[in-house]
Amino acid sequence: MVLGLIAGGAFAGYFPREAGIVSLSASIITFLAYADDKTRASRNAWRTSEATLHLLALCGGWPGALAAQHLLRHKNRKRGFQFAF
Image 1 (cartoon, one colour):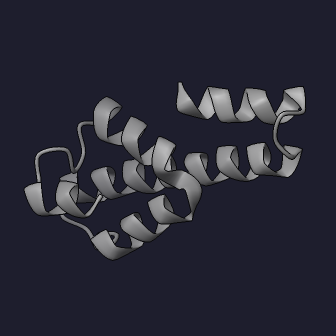
Image 2: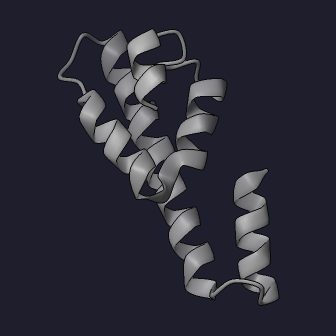
C-alpha cells in the first residue's frame, strides 16, 4: 500500500518520478532477495546474510522487505532481525 502511494504520488507529480522508480525497483529487488534467501534456506544452501537484507531495506526496499516478511513468512519470527528491521 505504501509503495503504491509513493509510486502513485511520483507519477501524479507530487514527487519526482525518479523517486517512484527507485522505490519500486528497490522494493522488487529486496522482495526477490528475501524469496531467494527463503529458497536457499529450504535447500540448506549458502544464505544471504541478514546484514545484506537490512542494507537492501535501508536503501529504500523496506516496502518489499515488509511484503516478503508477510507473504513469504520469512524472517518474521526472528526477534533480533525484527528489532533491527
